Length: 175
Image 1 (tube, rainbow, N blue to C red):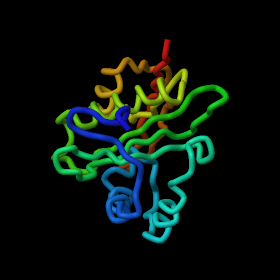
Image 2 (cartoon, rainbow, N blue to C red):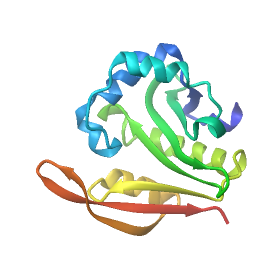
Image 3 (cartoon, rainbow, N blue to C red):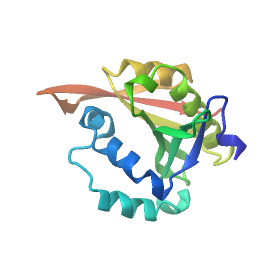
């Protein structure tokens, strides 16, 4: 689908072959804070998830796509629409690039741009929202680049490393 193809990356539906890749991401404790994960996922649970990944976004209320580098066809991250609400035409959006070496080189920016356009043009959403830890400067910069505006602060929302951190709520409205 051309809508989900950019210059350097493309977004694609999850495949059964993504089991090990998703297992690695979901069990990487260094990113649990941004994904609100507290316990490891088994390969069994991820396999079950992948077996149901064929569900339409209207049925599943979420859409998870692999971020793949065009040059190598290798998946480097995931981008999600979650809490999909077709009645009110909104969804949450989240992104993770697995390896530090693949971050800060434009892949995340391109993936977010593709999914924003898909959300507004194909799904005809009115708004997207993102929950971002106050100390996650790369994500704050990424989302504000696309016009997401901070609309709220969830005080002491995330408990990590024996301290509470704020989570910021951002919103992008399609005008």
